[in-house]
Length: 304
Image 1 (cartoon, rainbow, N blue to C red):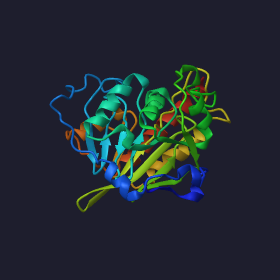
Image 2: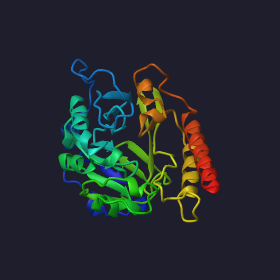
Image 3: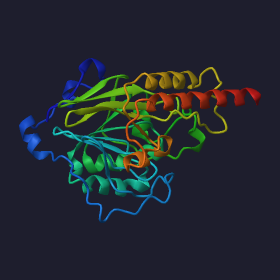
Image 4: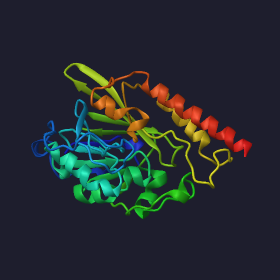
């Protein structure tokens, strides 16, 4: 399998990334997704805020597919050299996510790489079981490798007092921020997006349908949400990181925005065709909303 990550951008050794199969052999083994059969798909979502409620898989654009739940986004990026999964949804939703992947006609073992947006149980609580089912490498920002391996968040996280733990994750490897993951001819760019969580990450890549190509952005949350202890106005808080994350997303080429909680971008309506899928201002608007909420949060903290 032809799997590469730019060596100057990754802490991982070349030996770690070496593969035993040839590219040609792997191209035969890896099956590309096809449209799922909708006859057996669940009815329309009862709640778009339900993290665990199943829904059927959907094509987003090109070879990128939505395989998450009604309330939590999980994305499959398909390549002939091995598929990439971003996030896993909560542990309770693991089986629903796996069934969505299988409904596309691919094998779980076709997933070779798993990425995450951030280290909260609603987005990656099922990561350990997904890694075990696929055998995939989990690529992580270096500052949260220990969190993923231990299954325990720490006080750096604004929501620490309210977070549930998760099963420790195996086969975790660190990369440097702003790196580009290259799998065959697919390039997935990392966007550092700390603020909502210490390890916050956005991801951007390009997909084409015939001659029409779109820039897809899976943006991390820009919510300045915390437990009762944390203060974004504290000198050592993630407030500045959140501002920088917002600015970074706003400057990113963005045709199709994907958010971890679909309600933040009307994702389900856009995937189902009741609202336009593409909007070149979506990332700018998303960033502005995040900044306004942070400034409002800081004002409220000053009053207290």
